[in-house]
Amino acid sequence: MADKIRVVHYINQFFAGMGGEETASVGISVEEKPVGPGLGLQKELGSDYQIVATIICGDNTIAENTDEILAEFDKIIRKYDAQLFVAGPGFNAGRYGIGCGAATAYVTEQMKIPAVTALYSENPGTDLYKDRCYILQTINNAAGMRKALPFLASFAKRLVAGEPIGSGKKELYHGSGPAIEINYSIPASKRGVDMLLAKYYGKPFRTEVMMPNHEEIPLPVLSKPLSEARIAIVTDGGLVPKGNPDHMVPTNSKTFNHYPISEGDRLIPGDYEVSHQGYNNAFVNADPNRLVPVDAALDLKKKGKIGDLLSFYYTTAGVMTPMEMGKKFGEGIAQDLHDHNVDAVILTST
Image (cartoon, rainbow, N blue to C red; front, side, top):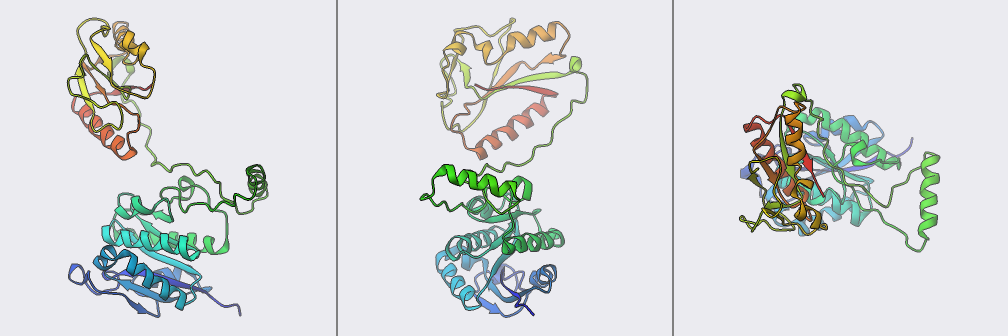
């Protein structure tokens, strides 16, 4: 009979049944059996796998002494000759999520052992470690345990078997996953052809250029005819009134602003300027309607193609603005649009 795959599982004090915040500073302990969610994980892994050790560590302990605790994890994992490491799942528990991400990244990068965890998208551990290890997607609380454990087990077994792992969008993990180790002694042309052949024949491979794994945004559906819809204009091209009254920065934006659309059938050149360093804005300075198309929108309103145009536009400078800040802007603008009964948006860029 073949030997079983040896698994080390990490959980926090809460899932080990030790208590909550009052025990969050307990040190490391080891149980040579599945504990807490490890019981379900063992069942999902099946008879060919055995959880030989469960590492238990308080959330405060690992969050406040990460490097020292990971060194202890290293010793334990080597002691039990682990062939697979699983952390959590940690859902949206902040310090636990940091522990899960840090441990999984360490085992992946330093120990070269298959490793995986599972966290909610807004867990701080997700942001910190999603591009260094596999962090599967979960809901935000432990009510999702029954779905998370089969997902974890199935993905973990694929890692052990060396099966090809696709993109995060396809496989439902956050970020790009662990970094690729590239052998630069092999010419890029040969590496590319080798990857193409591996893909063609269904063999394991990973692209050297991982695409960002952005969240899926549901496609909105207009609930009324366009001829009855109220339209707003939003731009990331940095159009502001002359003199830039709110001192909007031209890169790495910290805010968005909205400004009234002056009376008339178009924006007047000379009344506006551009605060944005990412493109040649001479054409927009000459005619601001080419970025914020008030003239075209009012013409559509006059012809009955749209119902109405919101009397002000929203603006920010998109260049070098971090994704999370852009998401914050989007949520703020969307709420304001909702408050003003806007049905649809013309979003212009550069």
